[in-house]
Length: 471
Image 1 (cartoon, rainbow, N blue to C red):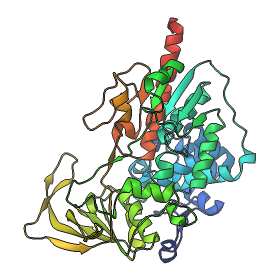
Image 2: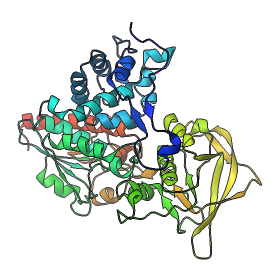
Image 3: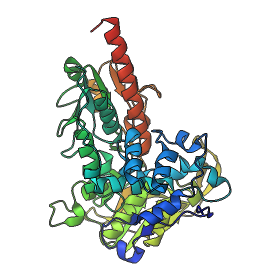
Image 4: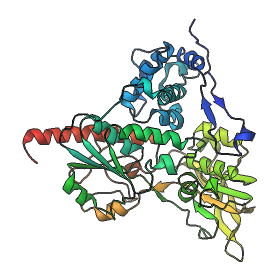
């Protein structure tokens, strides 16, 4: 009989007291085929497939789940690969609970099917059995060239989809390693970098070339790229950190989450002195913010030896933008949540090092533009928190370099590139954009969806151009 239990088949996780000591992956997912089959049996295989409409890249969810149910893991992986360039990554970091799983019919009266866990299982099987899958090479060349700026999820997805259609695609990456936020932003314990390298290698096998250490806007401009390519897709992300603009943010021991996580993830600070990038944490660390990035920074600080790590967030837990799973993992690892609490000053010692953080208590008022209740300071509620390190994790915005060096490219006041949501077309002819460079910091899967839509639009537009006989 199929398993129609009300709850998901639990995934295997490392013990919190052990995992907080190192950077090993926390969630091990489903560790055998029987666990995955049992969860796959909970899928109703709905005729109208509402879960697919909840996925930004429209993964053929019931189809791959039915293949797992039948024991055909190779078939499940092929179905995943047909629409997703990064299935093993999505299975780990996608917010399935607000996307595909939120549409699952099983979720009406019970827990939804563990779609993310099943995606991870099938994708990991595929990576472990490359010999069972056909070698995918570049499609027959169609004579057209496309440049992609940035090798994060948006750029990799756009590049992969275009390569499958016969385009010669070159990715230009500013850093020394490809992957964008996948390698510099998400910690090893959530997303192993060896896995990211394998996913990138699968895109390269399609014929995509990746050039690192190329800063578009400085090394080469978008206009110069257009001289040698038929179209340009900008997926450069949002790597410029926001700060609160409170006194003391220039003290030693204050990091943006972007720098803190880049040092740890991309530059391997957690292996110091094996890697030559140190990162100072001290005994007490505070992370300002309530999103996934804040959870990542706090959990990294704990692993780097901080005895006390605080999440300082000006709203309550219900208003936190972080995934519930990430909040739960942080709590299990001993992170202390200081909710309805807002920093107003970072206090230093005589040598310019962080010593304390002055905070005020907050209470929630009427909803603001984000739909969340606005935090209002309580009069006379100031207090001092002893800290050695402060990490500011209140969001990022796009770097202005491409905007400032690309005439005719319209941007929002806050720096995001203005692009059509369905096609990625910008105000500049043959320049398309998507992902965090357009929306500001968002999720991996939304960036992938934007890259996929842009690839389809580039293909349509270049076909029309060829049919019309113009250059």
